[in-house]
Image 1 (cartoon, one colour):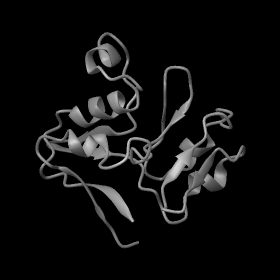
Image 2 (cartoon, one colour):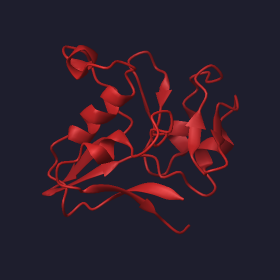
Image 3 (spheres, one colour):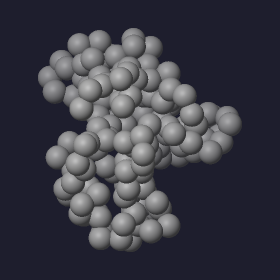
Image 4 (cartoon, rainbow, N blue to C red):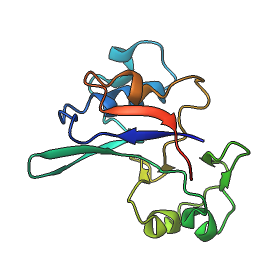
Length: 144
């Protein structure tokens, strides 16, 4: 399965992955209209530890704890191994957030759970990967 991988030694901590992610998931075709003056809600976020920066997003685990703990069945894993969320089914209990050992789930300003779905609706390469100026984030085949 292809997954988003991070080379933290190359990450500049510029946060462009976050902006590209938020724009890609906004449903709008103009980045300025989608993001200017609004709180962004990316599915990837930059963590900093001293001088090291790295992007954190869903790892699409083999046996995802978030799915096991989802009381409404909103989280599922498709035939390609991508963990997705059905926002219609999500009841906002946040059990998935508590169970994720990597801290990869987040919420928007309304409390709706958000997570990386590898830009499957967009097709091709995820927006965070395309927007990384230093190629610190890559989309590559990984053996489980």
